[in-house]
Picture 1 (tube, helix red, strand yellow):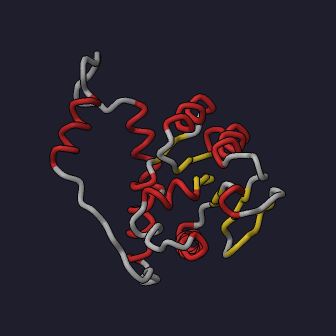
Picture 2 (cartoon, rainbow, N blue to C red):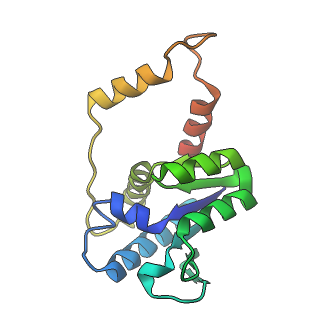
Picture 3 (cartoon, helix red, strand yellow):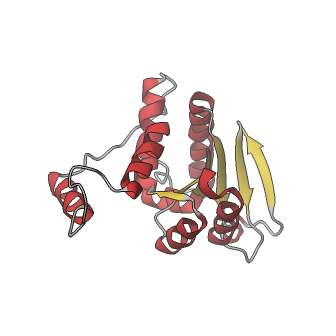
Length: 179
């Protein structure tokens, strides 16, 4: 399993990873926590950042704590690199993003998409359980309305056994268990 993360997307959607106004501090915190997570769970992680926000001209990859930190070329978006990597890894790839356009393309490649908030929650939970916990943890419990909304959308006008989950949901749940 290879986890491909849209770095700035995760930072924007996260109260924890996007806490500071300084991008460098947020990036450093994210890389530090993901390297601890990688040490515990042993997943290959590629964290992809857009070059236009970092000031880099050439594309390069650094390995920090076992996490591959990828910076794109100057005019290349992280979205393009993530789509390219998901084509390469296909079913092995799990992409962490909230970008609907990326989700559409990677699902065509056979990869699976995980929302940034869900992945952040899994990382925080794993770090708390391992006692290698980060400095501050902010988590929001989903409301009952969100659960009811998800249930009604998943089971609307489907044929077959009503107690059996669709393949897509079962695949998503099995991936979440592995995270």
